[in-house]
Image (tube, rainbow, N blue to C red; front, side, top):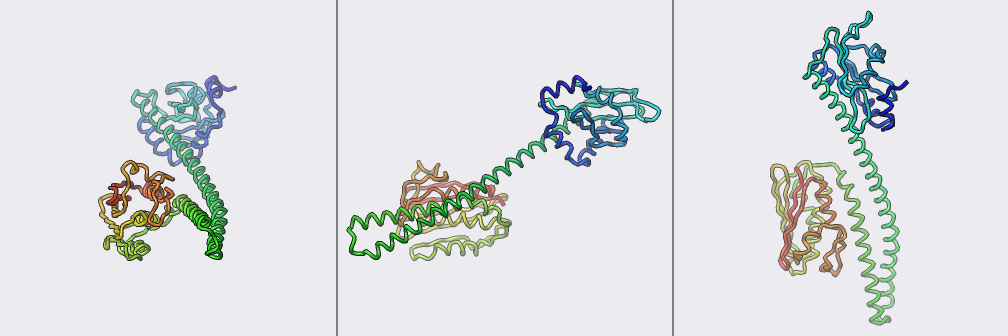
Amino acid sequence: MPNAFFQECRKLRPTSLEEFHILRSIPENVFREILFLASEACNTSAAALIITENEENYIKAAKDVDPDWLLTQEKVLKASLQQEETFVISDLLSDAVKFSFYAGTTMVTASGDVLGILCVLDPEKNELKPNEERSLLLLAGQVLKLVEFKKQENQSGRMQAALEQKYQDLERFASVVSHDIKSPLANIISLTELLKEENKGNLSAETMEYLDFLEESSQSLRRYVDGLLKFYRSEKLLEKKEEDVELGSFFEEVAGLYNVDADVEINYPKNGILQNVNKAALSQIFLNLLANALKYNHKPRRQVVVLYKASETFYEFEVNDNGEGIPEENIGKIFDLFTTLEQNDRYGNMGNGIGLATVKKLIDHMGGEISVESTEGEGSSFKFKIKR
């Protein structure tokens, strides 16, 4: 026959709760120190942690007491569970048992679920002093905090797994859609170029203008799709192995991709070593920043200067250019995904608002931050740092 205390608890909550499973799954050795502290603080020879689930008791951990014997003390345990305060009994002694003293505090979660009892036992003790009772209550609270921490950890793990699954679904979706879009786009671009080539001189100026617009729009859409894929795949870069990076050779490789035009001058650090950094992510950051610095620059001599310094906790960089600059009212939103400044680059192409969003995303994940200072007509300075 279930006691009144259990009946009230069952009205409030089901008995098969996550907290019970968590308490069961935590290894016994985790609680050995708590039982030792309980025994020492209460000046007793033994201690135990009891799980109470579905009106049945289980010994989770015990110190110097026989678990099988303790489970036979059903009346004592039920009486203990009925008490809101610590339950104490000093006449537990029988011929077969060496313990006469029992003190137990019931562990109840904030939502009203009874998880079990933290108790101490002794053959000679006959009372629990106020400071001993407080110690027992505090240690029972630590058990509850441990269970709550594990519960939050489990919830966080489930949320993380769900987010990872959503991300993988989104990445697969983006990959499939991009393929389905890029394939016909490639056909449109090729056929447009072929049509223009084979009918050179036979088409009116207006028709040629329409074909040029068709080709330009197709190219713009392809760049947009490519940028979107890079943004969603940037997460994969963060999974790459960390390694030491020698700055001279690193920048020689990255800047070499853009230093081919006669009007381009890129200056960068020749010395320095970054220890344990994600080289792949750092490369993508600089590729995007250098590409923007050179594309949005209509001057006859395009210049980019990369500066570097190391602080105690960060690697810090500056990418300075002499480009067109950014209007002050737009500086606060250039890192937002899909935000464009309605500005064509030197090749006549409109930006897609993905490159700088990807840069910020990578830097954020690397424990850093990025900012920009700019003067229209003079250039921009992108400053960022990543954790050492």
